[in-house]
Length: 350
Image (cartoon, rainbow, N blue to C red):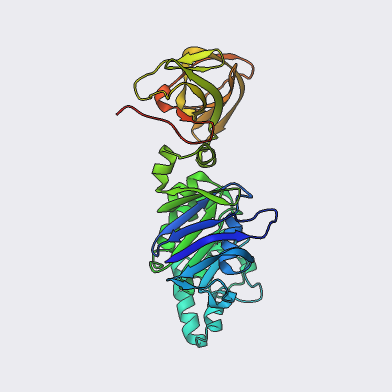
């Protein structure tokens, strides 16, 4: 168990602001946030690499805030997959075990087993420069995992790999960390899909704070705040200004009455959130096509309405001409509504 209380770091380009959380062993926590949200700052603060101006770090209820880095029982893997170029793959992974005092034969035996686990059993005697980028990242991951640290931290470990390798390692990740059941695993990413696929619990960071946490599917379906909805949505969610009066929702020249699946709040201003699945071709609204792009087997269309911009996604590869007008419908049951202070005030009919 890892507990952090009120962690605050010195004012810098990115700093932590009163961050608290309880991490349970055996869980994978994906920490999602945009660049500059404070994800790396959090991991570096836990390692003791970035100084705290306030707060405590407790491992199994023991305060380790002032412990030196080597005594914290933590491992950190960066996206740059740093390896020792003069050592073989085997000796790279055995290195931390030798530092722990294990004899060479024992260290190499454990390293060899771990390298087999990550699919590098046939590359023990190669140098890192003789490996592909994905293989080098596996070496770095193996070196971190072989220590069996209580806290295993992975800072955007797949960010520098090409698409195919990222997909492959995403699929393999649960198997790679399956033996670390006694560890707390923290995995940072800027990609919502990665955060939702890989973690038991998703933590959303923004401007140096934790703004939401919980099961990934629950957070996606019911983001507690506008900022949370923005961070976890890919393709981007669209926000437009509106207001409710006499149980009618107004936005630009458009309006929607209450419909099955969505209850309107009391009169007042609201922010309307539209994910791509809330917009469909054909309907009473008119939009001008700004841009269409392909994403795998789907087409993403950027639309300009009188009330603002929004994104629609359709299945298949479709051709839409920029500048053309398109009739669309807005599915009220797929909308989310946020109060002026950013709270999610969406109410659904059961």
